[in-house]
Every structure is written in C-alpha cells, then in structure tokens.
Length: 411
Image 1 (cartoon, rainbow, N blue to C red):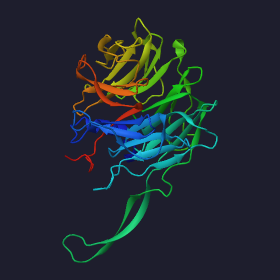
Image 2: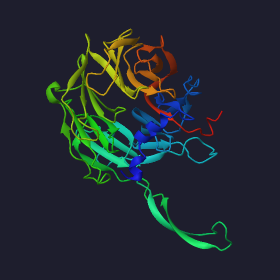
Image 3: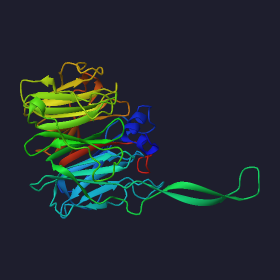
Image 4: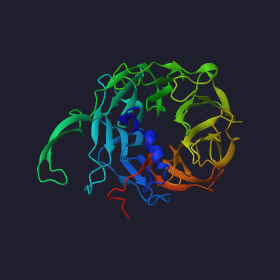
C-alpha cells in the first residue's frame, strides 16, 4: 500500500478511535428558502447550537445534499445549485486565522448531456482526496464521476546552513504541489442508476453501488492499479440474488475491514458480507431482520465496539417503532436480536453518526414537516427517551464530523 493510499477515510476513522482532541458532529442542510445552512455541536458530545448558519448566498435544490470530512479533518459539502443545476463543493478554510470558516464555493459544473442530478455521493478516495459521483436525472440514469486531482511532486533546490557550520549548501528536495487543474473533468462510468451509495474497501479502493430504474441492486469496485482513469472500474455486479428488487441499498465497512451490503424490501432487511478482507466477492444474501410491517427507512453506522449498528423505522406514521440490531462479532450470525429503541415522530429519513465518545446519535429528517430531530444512545440497546429538535424549515440533511478546531469554534 502506498503512502497516499494510507491516507484514507478509514485511517481517519481509526485515528478518531484514539480520543481526538476535537470532534464535533456537523449537520448540513438545505432550508425551505433554498439556502445551504449548517449547525454543529457546541462541545464534544454536547448539544447543538441554537440556530443554523447560512453558508453562502447561492440558492440550492432541496436534494441531493452530501457532507464529508477531508483527509485533514475539515468539513466539506456538496449541493446542487438551483438555477444552473451545477454541483457546488464547499470546504472549510484550512488557513490559520482565516477571516471566514469556509472557502468560497467551487463550481464543479455539470456534464453536457445532464440536465440535473438525481442522486450524488461525496467520499474520499485512495489518495484521501474527495471523489464526487452523480446519477443523471435524465431517463438514461447515466453515472458520472469527478475527483480532486492528486498533488504533484516538484523538485525544489534550497540553500541551507547545516548545523555546526557556517557554510551554506544547496539541497534538492521533492515537495508536494497543487495540480494546475484542481479537479478532473467529468468522467462517465458505464451503466445506469437511480440512487447511488459508496464506501471504501480495506485497501482504500472505492466501492460504489445503487439501484437502477427496475430497483435491481448493483455494485462496482475501483481498480487499484489505475484508480483515476475512465477504465479503472472492474465492472458492475448484479447483487440481486434471490431477493430480486430492493427498495433501499446501503454499503458499510465494519471494524474488521469487511464491507457489508444491506438491502431492504417490504418488511425484511437482508445482508451480504465480503468473503475476505479486500476481496471483490460477497456471500449470498442472508435475512438479517424481518418485521411485521414494511420498513420505512433504515440507517447504518459504526458503534463503539467497531461493529456495525443498524436502525430501521418499521411501519408508517407517528409512534411507529424504530428497531435496532448491532454486530457483536465477525460471524454472520453474531448480531443482536432486533429491539425497539425509540418511536418515530413521523415518517422520516435517518442517519447514524458517532459522537466523540463513540456513542451513536440517530438523526431524523421529517420531509413533510421539514424538521430535524435526534436522539443518542446511552449504551448499545438503550437510548435516550424522546427526541431533541435541531431545527425547522429544513428540506434535507447531511451528517459528518469536524475534527479541526477552526477560528469559529475555538473556546
């Protein structure tokens, strides 16, 4: 594995296991006026700020919205501009004592044949730099890819005075330098998807997956020897197996570095697991959980024991139960029996994210009432009673973590 490969989101997550000096959950959102807004915790493991802050004057579509953390620990966001449908990338300013927390928005454009995006994904790649994926809202459902170009290496000659002498000497060193073109052109990946999701393999390669217009699930692995070339993808695997059509598909990697595929259809959640670390093959589907009503939405996160944790709203409407099950070991059967941990405020979209102390918080976006609420676990099978409101007049959400103490957050 190269030095660049080692600097990945997986490494960042492992670094966070060692009691980081700064770790606060960050919530990005689009409000009902089309503004990109955000709020984060006022302290580690603590409450959120009382109100959202507007990030830019640009106007955005309510979806899609993505949030991620750069390899240096800074927050980044991806949203679709309302009038142009261009994807806009915004990242925190890394300069010390910068006058603004965020850099100016970067216009990533839009492929010439695309009128708008149906779904997007923002994730760090093999070299730790951000990768953007988008599915076209056109009937063809084309899949597009764009990434921040890697650093270049420049040879620099400097004059230095070695310790213990007054005689200057010239030293030639290789140093990293920003590329002349910060982002790649848009690259079309063969295939067609409606929704898209992604995770990193144990070796740093990206794995993308999604559902096509027929709700058939597919996954595709990045090729490690040519990771940033159009032909660098191994090819789509149809992973429908005996379950057939799916209504939701999610990818996740556990603490044993095994990638899991989760799929929901009707009242059942199924799972496939990588046959070995970094392999391109998976087990057959197994039934992870079955319920007495259809699944409204499910979310997957990484718990304090580095195992995967899954929550699902079962049934529809207020007071619908939210069940949870989590990994207790690496074997397929080593999952807890699903148990109710909370009751829904309404039909919502959910996201799980760890706090600095590794306790998970479950975020719920009510797309009808335009509200975001959250609750936090006390221990794996016991959660806080009730929900805490984060904000109102919000049409989408994206959750990540900030592990940098920027000027605006220093206490």
